[in-house]
Amino acid sequence: MLKYSTYHSIHSRTDESTNNNLGETIHIIMKKNKHRIIRLILIASILLLSLTGFMTVFADAGQEVAYEKIVVEPGDTLWAIGTEHKPEGMDIRDYVNQIQHINGLSSSHIQTGQLLKLPYFD
Image 1 (cartoon, rainbow, N blue to C red):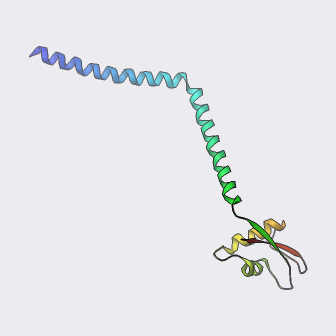
Image 2: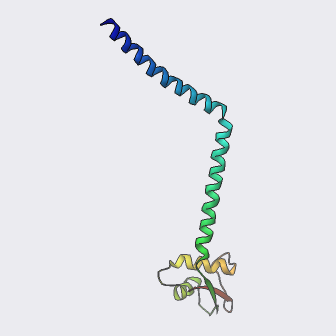
Image 3: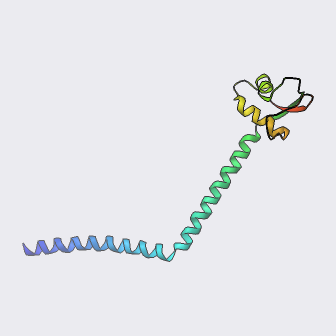
């Protein structure tokens, strides 16, 4: 009976020592390679962000944009022009922002007789 209980206690210690050795080994590897691991994480993050940026650029490249030119009439506003010319299903705010961007406008003020380029989507 004593022999079995001794065997059992030794067996348990062997499992614990194996787990401790594994934990110690991982700790030593992490400690020695800390700088390499940090560099690897930074490089992976930069690559991920770069690829995300490229995907965004190429996703917009598939949509052809042409320009329609109009002359601002008395009483016209960017909002009214945008409402009249925007594609179906597009948010008016996005369309007005695109008009401002294309024409280099820093505000929504336009003048009578001003020539505006409007985005026209195929």
